[in-house]
Image 1 (cartoon, rainbow, N blue to C red):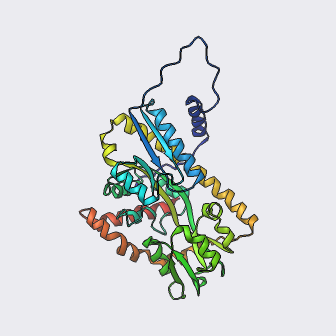
Image 2 (image 1 turned 90 degrees about the vertical axis):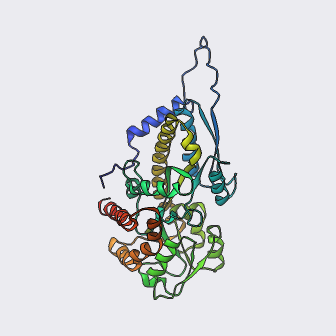
Image 3 (image 1 turned 135 degrees about the horizontal axis):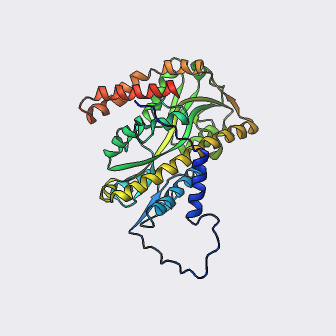
Length: 367
């Protein structure tokens, strides 16, 4: 795997975005010359809808930027109306609408009940930082960019860009999770994401941890009522979804990394002229860079805020994290959950999976 660039927003990039926004009429502009005649507005050739099922401020800002940039880079030929906060339905409803072409673009979670290879987007103990994810999703040779493009191809979607939410830690109301033994005698909320469930089962093996599968929307209430003692969460969710109010301890384990994918209906994509495809990809690149930097910044701010709220945060050492990772036995989980998809998709599925694992290991060792 070639060495990939990091998706940092540099000062030059920031300045270019400032000038770009100004040129789009979204910032300060010089007073018009009254002798000039304003050109007639361009009637768009394509008018699309884009949806996000969740209330996520930073992600919504990035998706609105993407819509504006598509309009700018296509000289008004494409107009996108963005509908945040579940205005067009639940996640699964939106996903099926994009498949059918009733909604053109959406922020999608690759849940395996919808997308057979979706678990590859966020397998535990692969990506644990924004820098690592930036390398993995590079459009030139990024391992996750390549593999998730194939994953979405199977469900008639075209991947456009990645939108991250950060590393997963584990919150508890019993004790801080410093070693696998600290899972003992707790009930933990888990989701239907089998990669995460199998990882927690292995890491907690022999401790008596019980797992309770609940929807994400029920995490707050379940912790508040004592239905569960612990749950995995993110810095953003601890603040924005108020998980900090119903948790005493939080361990920054970083055993998984959350990222969703902005996708477009594949048939629509294939019918577009190449110049519009290129403009959309360019807009996605800038929106993705903005989204990475915004979430990296907000994660730091949220950690300071959580300390003020009184949440007890534990930061494991690399050696302590290695104990959890070893106990997770990720090779077995890849064999069980991922290998069948690779073998169905590629002529030599095992060799392809081994190459993906090698590329991910290279990223972990170097970034």
